[in-house]
Image 1 (cartoon, rainbow, N blue to C red):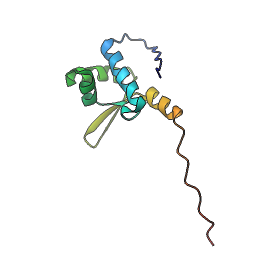
Image 2: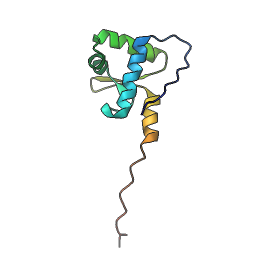
Image 3: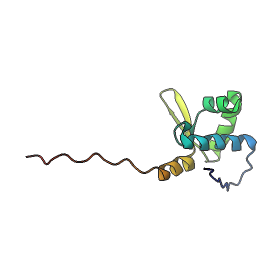
Image 4: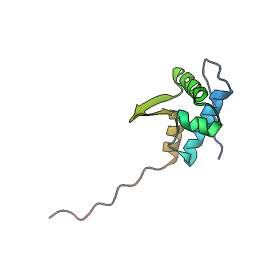
Length: 103
């Protein structure tokens, strides 16, 4: 279903920022890790040059709306509200049943 986003920030965001958040929200619906995007994924999904995607992400990071995760030569940007929403929607995996007691 559709998710409503409520933004309450002391800065003005433009259409690029809204497009980035829309893609991050869609990744919560199964096309990637919940709330995670990369410069490359945004450029591909939105048909933008990578520099445009990078600028939009840097602004969202500067405003505290996204977090940066760099490891193994890969940089991801996380929108924790979308990640958390997915975590709350998906029940945790059940642990395997315990075996018989040890003698």
